[in-house]
Image 1 (tube, helix red, strand yellow):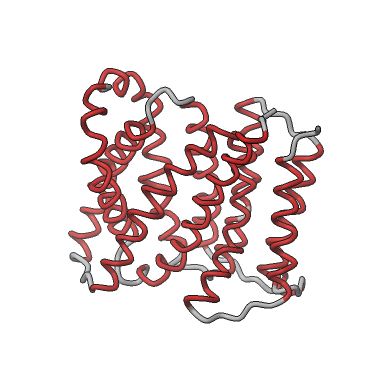
Image 2 (spheres, helix red, strand yellow):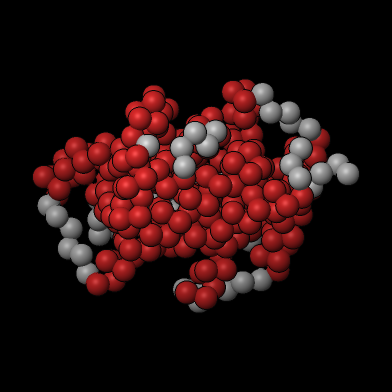
Length: 298
């Protein structure tokens, strides 16, 4: 049971991370045909690491013994949450539609809640299950545009398998963050995580550059990389870790359902895509489900 102020902080942290990630999907689609997946991931995390390094290296050096002690969990976290997860999303986006990506991404909170029950022993009470179902219904309304028959018309490709894997990877990463249990100060944790993730990306990105050549970085591409590096990587991962520490992975995962909603809002303002009643119904269901699942019994 979380106290109200702690729960509110956790919800706001998770919302902040998800809002930034919603913009990341729009940026990633614009870069996906210009830059190979692992190369894009490498550039993204190299930017995040370069921005964090001046502020965190001194304290990280002082806590180097604690970092070494945490390596058994930091290494899989870096591989799953930094090296592989984001690269797999970029791979998936090349061979499937945006609506399929949004639909499959909604399985992430389900995996988080399932893994939390199996590995962390979290109780799935009726409020959580009902909140999960209500939020999922809101996402399906958004994706289908209020027409359920559209869900039956979807065609799936091998990119959908990659996106399903990405959903499970992010759920696994969230479990590992919870297991980390604040054993390192957050700047130190992020610096170690990003450093290891970039290190493991070097051979993968190097292979892509050797095969396809170095990408042409236009001013627009550089700006987009800065956004996903500073926003979708550094800021969002910091907020997500704080959210999990405050309310746990299951409830933080429910906030992830707002991602397609905020993506739609961003597309409305940036891409001039239309909005209608399905967005309103979807938003009401998503936020209603989150409220139901996160409120205390009292």
